[in-house]
Length: 86
View 1 (spheres, rainbow, N blue to C red):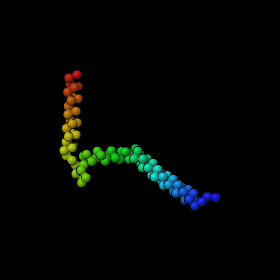
View 2: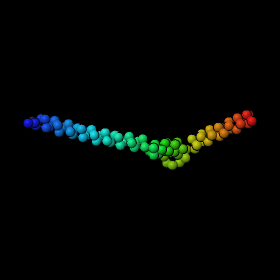
View 3: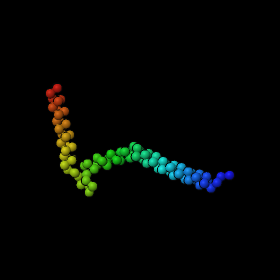
View 4: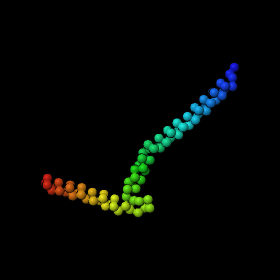
C-alpha cells in the first residue's frame, strides 16, 4: 500500500513534468515563429526601413544620400572599367 508521501511525491513529479512540457512547447512555438521565413523577411524589411526612415516616418536624408552616392560611385567605376577595357 502506498503511503501519502509516495502519492504526494508522484503528484509533485507529475506536476513538474507537465510544467516542463508546457515550457518546452512554448519554447518550440517561439523558435518556429522566429525561424519562419515570413518573420525573417519582416524583421529584415523593418531593419532596412529603419535605416532609411526614422520612427516618425520622415526620411533619413543623410543615409539615403550615402547609399545613392555609393551606388553612383559604383556605376562610375564600372563605366570607367568598361571604357578602359574596350
